[in-house]
Length: 378
Image 1 (cartoon, rainbow, N blue to C red):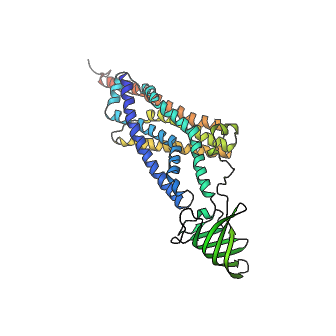
Image 2: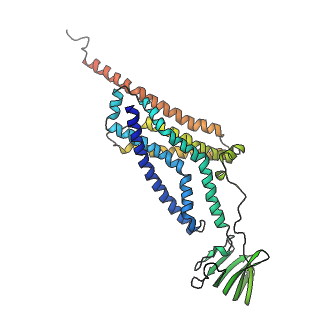
Image 3: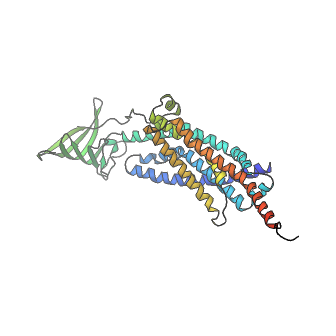
């Protein structure tokens, strides 16, 4: 039909343009955030683009929902402003008749949001966590960058290797080495002209040559200075150690369903809520879109952004309530998403029925004003 094809074609153009803009904005924000994490030592600088890609992929459900909401609002706003809605209303099309074509356009997007929220979201979180854990679990010597002071994984050591005298690629050694250590109530500062890595009985040792060692007892302030020709210290060899603790964000949806703890149900409410929120946004966009000549066409976009932000803040609040045990998962889904859906459908029904009712009421007023009064002469 002409009605369905024209509406879906314009929705497709608006949705595509909005999606490109939002993805570009989110990628820029995630790139800045990931670069900040890399400069702070939490992300490997060589894996910045990979971490950013996983992060953007995990946020795609939210991006798709907002794109769909904005596309429907922008399309209906333009149709109101161009008086196309008046033409469709005059042809017998009520506001409720727009809901089926909108859902026919939105169901592939809703399906994609469901797959991304229930399957891809935990997978991307797990990949990002593995990349960060692997980078954080490097050995102390692997953390050292020439010309930079670098803190060890436990925060007890600070290393420095001269940039100009650093060894080449593949060499396990360096020159002009500085190590500051604080443990067991003592502070030790060690410097050496050269150093190399050696493996002794499965453990890695840093062998220093031609240096000195200053050891200070923090409690008494006693200081001892010693020089050495060769000095060895064991370094952390746990380069790929992983934390065994699993967080709900990295667990699959089936794993969350098998263990219905408060934290797991909290995470599950977020994933299911993303899908339900996307469906409700379609109904809200249809029910709430209208054009006020005094405000302008930008009012629809402002409404969609504020409604989207308010809805997702409610999702976060509900997730916190479930984690704290204030409300159960079924109750939250029924009250929050079911309540918003009922309110949106009621709003849509009132607007659908209110258009002809207002027309008949105005016609009756005009007829009453044109009719002669009872006391008038014939």
